[in-house]
Image (tube, rainbow, N blue to C red; front, top):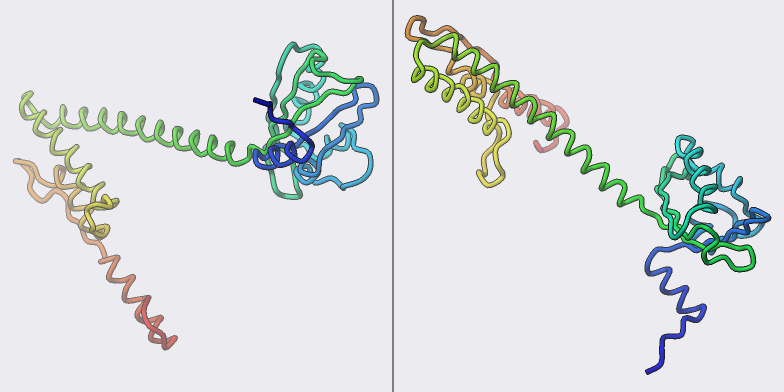
Length: 243
């Protein structure tokens, strides 16, 4: 069995399929060579000399010092290295992963070789996950704070353990029910409730007590109906159907 011969054309097809841009760096002259994908990725002309300083002008200012230090350190590193950073295309920001081998491994005639990979989508996904995790953390903390406050309120308004348990359950259930009204589950196939209905549900445990009835009075406009009325009036004036 013969091995696969990696000629120039096959190498080009493989790198294009993987979204990989090739680079070489002359450690003596600081000259960089980029393939066509690399030049497009960095937004540099297809001709002329490229140096690290030229590419540096396209690196995000917040990442520039770190990238300079990372590339300077590659000469003293043993084995493979990888560094991610941002570059600028006008107002557009893209994430680049630079990969190669340090400590002169793979050097040929004082020229080192490596790759650039566009990892923008991966970084966006990571940022989205971090944002979601932060939002979930914030909401969980809010739930703890609300539960603590409800427990304190129930302890003050009841005299026995059983009364406190019942009161606390009612308050938490009201929160849950109101949440379902504001943000119904997609499987429920129902629209969000009107403001007044949600408030009545939410405040029900606080509205009446054995000693005081009708402690809370709620009067709100029927928000959804008012919205539909305004749309109908606007559509009539514009002589077009309501959407």
